[in-house]
Length: 400
Length: 223
Image (tube, rainbow over all chains, first blue to last red):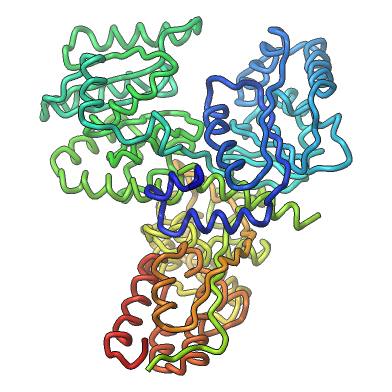
């Protein structure tokens, strides 16, 4: 019994045996993933699930992390923001430091692999030390469609040396002279955030959070960030509250040293006033089981983002059979097929209307939730992600 | 009577890699111009292999062009005109491309302004890279065929119907040819080749083929 077989009960029929056949094409190949952290963030979360599956299926996969100074990571954080369109001033000295840190890591790491997969901008400069063998692939997880051009121009000199680039959505990409592929991110149905919970376990988790299920629950799980429009969610809740006695839960990360996050949280508290049916939950980074329990307890899940990356919290809720109402932004539009697997909305009023409509039509909620779960089963689980990697390696290997 | 095929049916599945062309359209004129120029693998991606990506839920329109016009541009008329297009009516991808171009040109000629995705997303052109995957499974009898079909990955259905018919030039589809030639069941073969997969999902096609096989097997003529 392999690790992959654990997924047999949750994926579409035939999938596991098919993946094993697909893996035959790259069996024994050496694959090296490199990113900037083992902890926290979506990339590490995906690699933690993906690496064991690659190994299990016969691929010789390993994962390395680059090291760097605080200044280096401050620079790459500024890269991150600049590539997503924010104005940043990065002095030439720091650009040179980025190159140096990548060179130091290149001296430390072994690139002895058939495929070297570099995640995001931080380690992109490693390609300067590429050995003759092996295909190098740049996996970009962020939206670089509207970058600050000076920073993109700097990064582009490295990216064009890769054999291929991968983006999560076509609209996140840039024009490049190398082949570009689309691979959606995924959720792991067996992780703590998504696995089935017994009713006892769920009740215990909800009790710990002081959440009661006596009223229908509207839930948004997201950072306290203006782009997630938490104030719009409260307004939508108030419009609905005139007709339905519901409660609203806004669950997000604990206030950190992010000054804007703290400011948004304070605005949310002010807007919520003392409404006993609005619950603002500050959860630690590893509160995966708590988020799982909240999503399962929700009646309707909201992700009313104004701007969004891929927005995998939508797939997480869909996987739990919940109807999701999302903002018309980023990857939310790919996950929510309007009226079939959920609803996208363009305004606060639109969100309120859809909540109202769903609460009045429980049979629609049930059908949308059911179709949402099936849609995720076939498109956004880690097994599909594994298949994409196997196919890409097979394709690039064949080309050479 | 147990009919055993001389040559077994070899089940082959496929995986679609999605390659981005780096080209997009914001309005229907740009869509038209791009469709005239893109590689045929891109026409294939946005029409035929749409089904490979919508295995369970058919979606509101059966190809990407119709879906974009109706949902993103909010031009339901063009969405409907493109949605009703059946790729099976065309000899090859080039003639399908010509028909799509004609439909959009005719539609635009009746309008004063070019419809544009104002609130919606632009259309991003992609192309398919289909990776063939032999499953190692085979069938020599109708019972084996039916049992295997019920359990395999649904991409096998796609490969032996859509891919075989359009890109590999096997007009009846692989299932029908094998059933006719190897099992000597022309009526069953004809029923399978007449299934129109266009307006449904791959899972529905699987279920229909199994149902048709079961009808033959229940009669007891072949096992």
